[in-house]
Image (cartoon, rainbow, N blue to C red; front, side, top):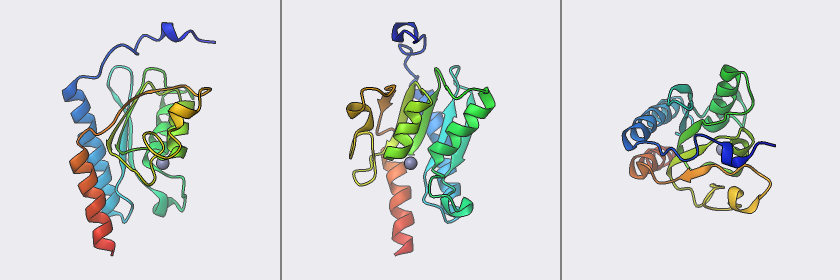
Length: 165
Ligand SMILES: [Zn+2]
């Protein structure tokens, strides 16, 4: 077992500009997803030094895969890129609060920190619903920062669903 005290990245906070830049990339992925007819959610996976290891938007329609959420895509891409299923010291930045499936996957991949934009009272699994990290003590618990550029992220989703009605 790894001692939690030995995790070097845990105490280093993400700078405000770095956080906003990463969210800009995620918002761009969300817009690109909307243009493809996908629910507009985008994500990026940052390495311990802040390098972008992966970025993606939802691809459930395109891939005929109900589990092809942006978070799942970047987790898998980053794992393959690093050659490890453990993304130690990595941060995931996503435009919407992760659903329970993604929240659990983020923990399994040992992501250090999850940053999200809009809160999702209906489908979220971090601050809503099953609150995966609060109720599953056996899981790795990433640091969570919610509500980053929330207005923009929420507006994207609102506009997308309004246009479909
Ligand atoms: Zn999800």
